[in-house]
Each structure stands twice: as C-alpha cells, then as structure tokens.
Image: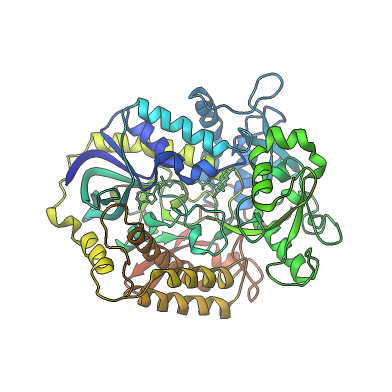
Length: 578
Ligand SMILES: Cc1cc2nc3c(=O)[nH]c(=O)nc-3n(C[C@H](O)[C@H](O)[C@H](O)COP(=O)(O)OP(=O)(O)OC[C@H]3O[C@@H](n4cnc5c(N)ncnc54)[C@H](O)[C@@H]3O)c2cc1C
C-alpha cells in the first residue's frame, strides 16, 4: 500500500508532535508511531522544563546557556546552546498559551524550581529555572500537543512501526512501515521525513526508559550510511529505584531532598561543595559509586548493587503531595515505603543518550564535518544530536530541546517542501524491509532472541557503564560483534500477522545491537574522561586531542570513525568545578 505526503514525522513524543504542529499548518503531514501517541516516553518525564523566565529569582538566558555548556563538559556546540536558552522563554510561554497547566506562584505566574547544574551568574549558586506541572510535566506537554495536532488535522498512523528509510541519492523519498494490527507493509512517499524516535536506554540492563526506547531511528539511519554522533556519551541518572531503575526525579533534590551514605552523611558536600546534591548528573552518579566502592553504601559490602539513601522526609507530607505526587506513589507501589517517613533506596540508572543522528539547528541531518546534507531528512529530540547536551545533559534541558528544536525543524520542513517537487518512491523500495521480516520469520529452525537481549543488556551495563576502562570496553566490542552474528540466526516463535510482538521485539533487538556496537566502539576509541564518559585508565579530560565530536559510520560489521569540530566560539573550555 502506498500513501503520499509532503511531510512524514516518525515518532509522536514531544519533539515529533511539536514539529507536526508547525509543519501541518502548511503541508500535508503524517505522524507514524509504534505506540499510541500519548504513550510515548515524553509522557513519563517528571521534573520540569527549563527556561530563564526569572519568575521567582533573577535569571538570564546567557547563564542558562553557560550552564548547559559547562554541564556538557565543553563538548556542547555553544551557539546552539545559546539559541536554545534564548528561545526557551518564548517556547514555555507558547506551551502555556496552548493550555499547559503549569504550577503557579502565589501571584499567578509559572512557578520554577531548582535542578542540577542550573545556576545564577555563571555558577554562583543554584537558581530556580525549571518550570513544572507537579511531577507530570512531560505528561502535560504530550497531552497539550496531541490535542493541538488533532485540531490541526494531522494524519496519525498509530501503531505503525517504521522499518526503513528510502533515499534517492542524497535526497529523502519516504519510509517503509509495518502496520502492527494487520502485518501489512506500507510505503509512504514524501518530500521530507523527520525522525523523532526518542532514546535507546533499553540497551542497558537497568534503565529508566520505556520498553519502546530501542533507538529505531538512529539504527535505521546508520544502516543507510548516516553517521551517529557522540554515541559514547550515555547518561546515568543518579537516582533510580534500587534494583528496578524506575526514575526518582531530580526534582526531589530540587525541592531539597538530600543523598546520604551509611553514616547518615550528606556526602555530596565532599564532591561538589557549592552545588552539593544539585551538581550535574555525571558527577553525582560517580560520587554514589565512589561511596559504595569505599564501603559507605547502606549495606556497606562494596558490591555494585549496594545503594545510598535519598532523604526527602524533611520536606513534609504536604510538599511531597503537592509537588511530587507521582514520586510518592511510586515509592509506595514499588518499595512499600512512604517518602515522608523513610529515605528512598536509590542507585544510578541508565537514562539518556546524549548522542544520536547529527543535525544542524534547523533539525537538518548533516552527514560529515563539511556540513553535507541529505535533502529533506530531519531529526529532532533524543534520537538527534544538535549538539546541545555535549558530554552530559542537564536535567530539564531535554524537554526544552524537544520543544525548541521540534518547532524549528517543523518550520524549516514547511518551507522546504513548499519549494520541492513531489518525490516518487520506486515499488521495490520495500524489498529490504520485506527481506528483513522474511529472515526473521521464515527459518525452519533458529535461536530465541531473549537470551541475546539479556546478554546485550548485561554486557553494556557491566562494561560501558559509569566507570570504564580499555579491558571492559574491548570485551563489550567483542561480545557485541558475536551477538550480532548470533542475531543472524534468530527466528520468531510466533508466525501470526496481527500484533506479532515477537517479531517487533526481534526487529528492536537488531536495532539495539547495532547501536550497542557503535556505542562500545566509540567509547573504546575516546582516550580521555569527559562528562558521562569516565575512564579509569584515562582519568583526565584532554582538550588538546579530544575536544571534538565523534562520528561513527556503520559499515556492515565494522564501525568507521571520523570527527567533527566543536563550536567553542563563546566560552573557552575550563576545568569543571561545582
Ligand atoms: C522517566 C523519565 C523522566 C524524564 N524526565 C525528564 C524531565 O523531567 N525533564 C526533561 O527535560 N527530560 C526528562 N526526561 C528525558 C525526556 O523525557 C526524553 O528525552 C524525551 O521525552 C524524548 O522525547 P522524544 O520526542 O525524543 O521521544 P519519545 O517521547 O521517546 O517518543 C518516541 C516516539 O517515537 C516513536 N517510535 C520509535 N520508534 C519508532 C518506529 N520504528 N516506528 C514508529 N514510531 C517509532 C514512539 O512510538 C514514540 O512516539 C525523562 C526521561 C525519562 C525516561
């Protein structure tokens, strides 16, 4: 089945919906999503969205941009960060005007709270910059944008899994998708395609990410020759529920929660004397692991699954209920504790990929250091790399990235398609996807994918985690290479066409394996410590060699690496102190 549009958006999280809202005003637009739109992971975002509104304390977009650059350990492209911080203010007011129910100050303005790494006057002290709707900020953003898209007449293809991107030379011509309810393959031809497929935290064993976060967009692009940027930088959020990885938002610390070790000591005072518990996430995660390794975890047995306490008891039941109601519920449901009475057992959890499909600030995909474009191809949100998060993202800057760059990409797409002739897609464009499905379903015998998935997730967790070294990472590269070979032999147990989740999981596993290999190779290659990439064998940041972005090209079974310049045109890189 063939369909024709001017603009196709793959993914209906915050970034995809914002882009859809903009482009649909001027062009025939379709949004494809493998999950029902409002079930996208954006809906799980808790803590807030940053903007220097200055509603509660003095603030300035330049301070916000500087914090973003410093938080990203100077691997951030600085003009892009400044643009994001500048446009943040209008973006939040736009959301308010579209109906988003933010928490309010007593005089009726949008309330703001503290978050890690966000400071006043270039690092002096924490500042209240995060706008929030209790601890359901992402949920509210998603609902607001979805309603507006419906109003604009966006054509939604719900529960369609995109399998492939169709290119004609250096132009984009459309996508191939599987309709989950029927098993039918659809060809969607379009002058432009935007990937907004979200994160890929499922490559790790313990993660805050939803089951659908399997990096389909970046993997599809990588198989079509597009490089992925800075994949070695993966953020571990300091406070996942111990053993489960379910997120306890940084907003708990923003509201005054404190991390403690088995001596009841506020240990962050030793690691970040100025910002304490509100230091950037890479530093807090390392501090927690360092405490555990020193025997100061709550059990004190130095084992990697020991934990520390996040103490919010002093905030009082009323604050917890009004500002952190979902977190309070999670603690009761998953731990059987009331955070107003007991500290929460926490351990870092794999959370956010700073890397992804390289783009410029219009969301256009850029495939090398010279700025070469694939015409009509865009990416935005967590699957993309602009790069505003560098080596470590600050909390609340992802929701902001979705809204600011989603809007910019949508606008640019609308202009682009207005000046372009319609693309036609050849009928054999779906052959590759059909072969992929046949390989997975039509073998007489084959391996079960479950073990490969488990092995991948454990290997990534143990070897490409918070602390890294050459031995572990070499092991991970070898293991991923072998698992990718084994993957050639997997087959589905289920042969049905309707909602064949077995098939979907195998397709997603293939995507995660490709991204895991790229991540491991990129990490082994970078011989320094910067942001979330922390090497025991190279403990220092080395700007003389490594102040550059990695570009990784997947060439069948090999990963080829190249580099791209970092924009440091505003602030000279300095050592980070908090
Ligand atoms: C628990 C949690 C809490 C968070 N809290 C915050 C916070 O408070 N503040 C903040 O700034 N950030 C937060 N983040 C990060 C932030 O929420 C995410 O980075 C962001 O929401 C990602 O949005 P997105 O639009 O890129 O993708 P997502 O919202 O993940 O959506 C991806 C979309 O792509 C679709 N898709 C994927 N693959 C395919 C395919 N093959 N075919 C078709 N469709 C596909 C999915 O169906 C989905 O619609 C949090 C993240 C988590 C996990």
